[in-house]
Amino acid sequence: MSTGNKYLDYTILVIGILLVAYITLRILRFFLNKFLNRSSTLLNVDPTQYHFIKNALSFLIYLVALIIILYSIPEFKQFGISLFAGAGILAAILGFASQAAFSNIISGIFIVIFRPFRVGDIVEISKQFFGTIEDITLRHTVIRDIENKRFIIPNSVISSEVIHNFNINDEKVANQIYFGIAYSADMDKATRIIQEEAEQHPFFLDGRTEEDIAQGKPKVVVRVLEWAESSVNLRATVWAENPTDGFFMKCDLLKSVKQRFDKEGVEIPFPHRTVILKQHHG
Image (cartoon, rainbow, N blue to C red):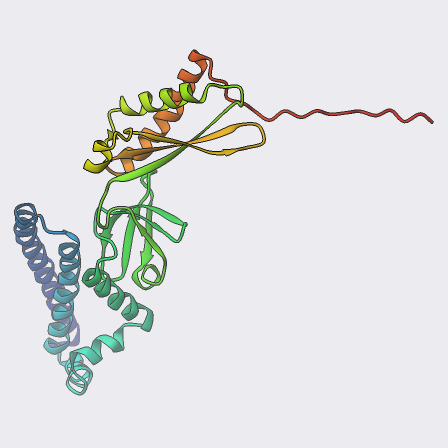
């Protein structure tokens, strides 16, 4: 066999092995998706592990394809034997992977095991990144923010940061909404307006316990926080089913309460300054 034909055969062999690996991966992921989606729905199981399994499956299939290629081509066989036989598969992986990449893989495994967040959770990472966990791969975690942008953060980085998870145990959120009224305004009227506007919002959730209800506590608690320089500052605690609903409800209430204040004569103050001009006679 001529050298040209030999290299052509090797090229066809490599393409064939990679093609088989690709088709095998697509078939396995198809059936895996059907099985995992069904079991996730029936068992109400967190899908985070499934995303990780599917990503790990891709890595393993192509690793097997690489090993087959190394052992199928005589020129590569000795290299493959010396690479894998002496130290084993793990040593080969460590040889190919950099320290940072391996650190990301280990961190990804820890994320799946200890679950500081899951796919679908709303998180804030060190006051820098805020959004929904979209995917967790062997190397990185993908966060989608409110503008539909994606933050791709290496697992080793995200594992060492402070994570604010809005969904880890209970999705319900108590929004703290602040209002300022004039010293001359009727505080009882302002409180009533805030409560009425909050309670009629479609995203409003009655967050009271049975004990709170028995004691007659209001659905929306409005407290006087401070006497500021030019206003009496009020804070309303308004519950919502989840952080997304809570955010939209907060925005809506800031608008609707302002409109009610204007309509019913509750003044919203703004700072006043008295400037005294002195004339200097020469």
